[in-house]
Length: 166
Image 1 (cartoon, rainbow, N blue to C red):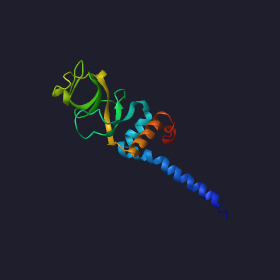
Image 2 (cartoon, helix red, strand yellow):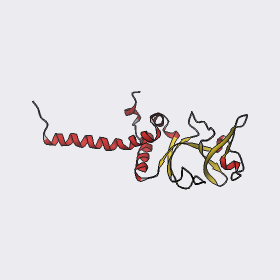
Image 3 (cartoon, rainbow, N blue to C red):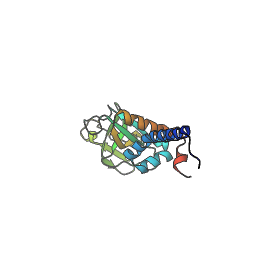
Image 4 (cartoon, helix red, strand yellow):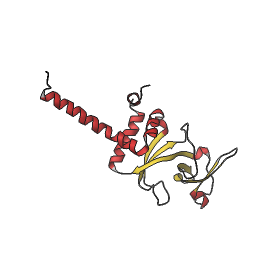
């Protein structure tokens, strides 16, 4: 019988511990955004972005001081519906608000909740939309590390080859 030496056991334990700690950020992201969105982010890495929200949402609410996960308007399955939180270009810069009404027709118009209260008195068009919030989580140190790791993994690393067989 061949037994492992103390050094070999230590190396194996070290490998396992490093593997667990390296996967914790991705487990956090998967738990927050869901497995479907997580896998889609590796198929379309340039179509997802995370941002810490401290000043974008104009009204006090549930998205203040949150990390926002955005699906960009260029995503193949992007669609805006009533109640979605969108990021858009306004006359005063970049803003974030909930969609109140979308009109269909030759030119699609989108009205946000603030549009109805005349803060942004003009409708939005498709070219004004940057993206929509598909998930949010608390803005803390761990989530910042986890989502930064996720964004780096989707855009700069070849982790997709490890996660899929194709």
